[in-house]
Length: 115
Image 1 (cartoon, rainbow, N blue to C red):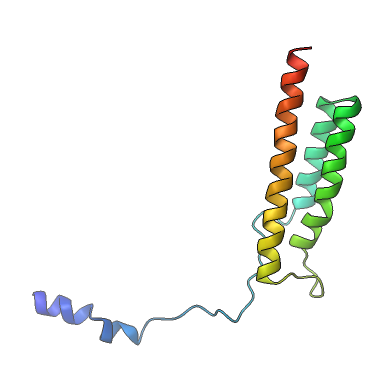
Image 2: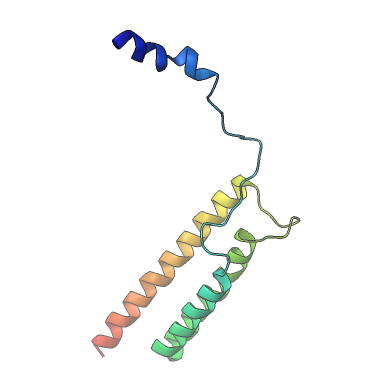
């Protein structure tokens, strides 16, 4: 029985059935839904409802800086589709921007509680 299992699962036998990934093909599928713009607008509206004055203005400025990054990252036009390397860089910039916005939201909420 062991010989049959070894034969069935031998690398030589299975190698012919293995498929390798197509590294040459670009797979720039978005990591978030195609409706990223609606998510962006929703976050912006939430900021508008919960913050006022300088805090709101500062968060809006950060959101305005984030928008072009999102547009480029999730572009569907052939001329603007970023390379894998560019996508990695854009993802890092987007993550950094979102983390900064999140940190400021938390700080502003703490500030409001103590005011």
